[in-house]
Image 1 (cartoon, rainbow, N blue to C red):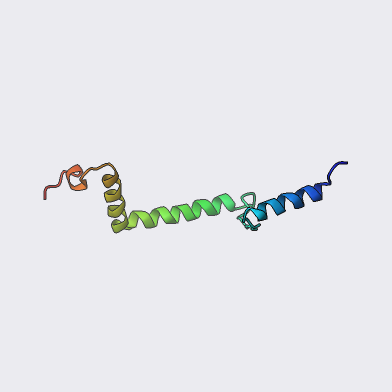
Image 2 (image 1 turned 30 degrees about the vertical axis):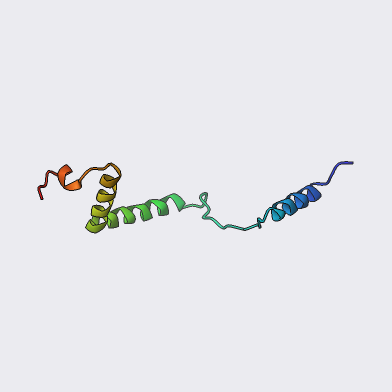
Length: 81
């Protein structure tokens, strides 16, 4: 006799719980909603403008990049110390 869908789902959930897992419901923005793409673009523009204005952040990111590449940022910029 075939197992009902409800019983299979229940068994699957019981197995997952036995593995130490628990169900979690996550709410996400509805990407199909009108205006979603425009709001994303607006927020991205604001972030980009803030990042461009933050000289300390830019210096930090440059140093991190050069550090990963093992390059001295002062040498790369042609500066002498």
